[in-house]
Length: 426
Picture (cartoon, rainbow, N blue to C red):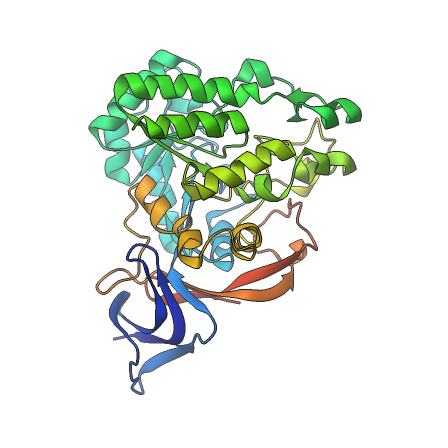
């Protein structure tokens, strides 16, 4: 019987609203005791968590692992190692691999590969449409039975609204969620950065805010019609935040996420023409960023996510127009979110951690997000005050496309524990 005792830590469990110093005893992959003082015996591994947070394992409900099909960018092994280094115990990779995750066999491939070489839980997102071609729905029930926990054609908007309506109806039958990449492809076609002052000044084709807003608007209308549910990925504009806020007030089953790069960078930051600042949706205006802050604080934006999107150095060495969209994010996300919301005292520790634990678990019905007795021992131990500098060359991701190289950060996971086993120690 393997035992792990975490002593003297600040135990923070947003699901039960408990924030106090407690010892945590783990045995055979489960939480077996929570007390002010738990005595160890000789067979117990001890972690002294004094001055650290002991929290439910962090959950990232939006990332890309590039496996199958693009091992030069990322593999399940390298991606899960990077996730563990960032404090994530569970991740939800999107379906836009090569080939796309549109069959039960491919979901099983991911899960079996992860069992062999991975180190965190993978809860796979499957494609909404076969081949991401927007012509025919995938077999939702079969995919869910194989382990898929949601459906998305992320990377592409579903612009066939009849098909999206059917997807919302079928997903409702099996109690699953559709994850929307809200973007009108005709409005954004050819754009590389946010359409505004800086795109005009720098001579780079722009992507207007309306490309996101019109898509969010029409998809909310379908939710209203079908009584289904939808989750909006990587929200970036003030218009989208307002639409989602109003939909929630109406009682519609709508949730949304925000990414760290949209909270700490704006389109003003693209003046150095760094392709590692090219992502989709693009870095928006300061006004949009302020709307995202407000959306997080008032609950309009339910969860934090990384949108970890690895690309090779060769691809990201191209011009802003030619380089692919996307940046890596597993290892910097926690510190960036702490910088924006916790160290500025905008959110308490409990409310901050909700966005990374119980809320994402609730949105996608993932059986994680808490650390209570008899629950699976997925635990992240965090030093919220550790100051460090991010050197992308030390990243465990196979790709190094980060705009945060040499950025000074504050807050770091020190232990990542999955199913009672320490998988990463920083």
